[in-house]
Structure formats: structure tokens, C-alpha cells
Image (cartoon, rainbow, N blue to C red; front, side, top):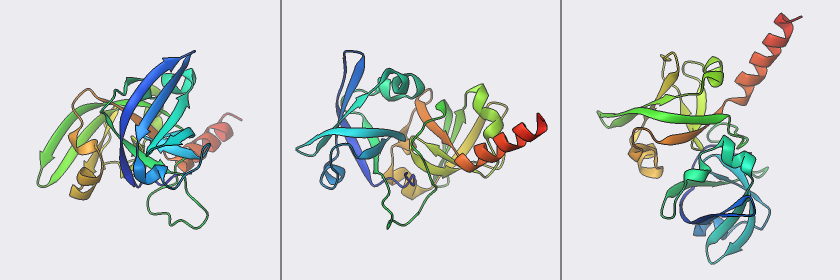
Length: 200
């Protein structure tokens, strides 16, 4: 599990296809120094297993299903990514509980800077819209955020405070950029329970 509190910005050094898999390598020295092979790491919100750690870099093998469900396939060498090691039993929960299981890919519809904050409007796939809750939690590229009070018919907004802008890549994203979305697990669970009861 993860919290969505980003501890390190890594840099993609390779993203190559081999025998149907993608081999993704990220330079992330702080994370690399404290993990072992096969540990779970969230990369832009996607839970991946480290297969090799060497000289401050962490390599991952990404299967086609993960590439299809996320925006990882589009990462190019030099891209900055959010890196978060998995929680231990003694860690503080500073954000929200995340599984690293991306629900879908959204797109940045607009970016507005005003009064020290950056407001992003993000389009969501139609199947995800019903799970959005005003002022509810959501993870965007692995960053724990709170949705705005008003939802669009196919979008939501998030307001980035200056510290989030400094510590993540979200403040500099451009319109049209894809972002990984993970919805709140408990919201989905309650919604599924309600649907199953109404179907009886």
C-alpha cells in the first residue's frame, strides 16, 4: 500500500520493449538506497515490482496489461516521475490509502494559475465518472489530492497548493497530458455494495 505523499522525483533513463514486456528504468537514488529486489514501488501511482537495483537506479518489468491500463508506455528518457516506496507497518499515514492499482487514464483539460495555486481540470473515462465524489480523495499520477466541490459531466478539478507544485510534477503538466487515476477504494466498495443490494 501507499499514501500518495511523494518522497522522491525520479528520472526515467530507459523505457524499452523486450519480448512483449517493457523494461522501465528510473534513476531514484534515495529510494534505491533503502529497497530490495521484488519490493513494490509506486511509479506515477502504478504499483510495480523492482527487478534490479544498481547505482541509484531501479529497473521494473511492465506487462502489457499494465501498459494498456496506465500512461507508463508514454514515458520517455528524461521524464520526471513520482516515486513512492510501499508502506511498512510502522509508517505514518499522511495521505490516503492507495493500492497502486490504476483505475484509468485521465487527460488534462485545462491548467490555470491563480493566487499562488494551480487549478487543473481533468477529464475522466466515462466508466469512472460515477465514482467521483465532490471534495472526495483521488490520486493523480500517484499524488494524493482532493477533488473540487463541483464536478463536470466528465471531469473534475483539483487545486494544487504551492508545496504540491514544488514537490511534484503536476504544477507543470501541459493541456492534453495523460495522467494515471486511482479512485478512493472505500468509495468504490460502498458503491458496489449499494449496487448489489439494489439489484436484488
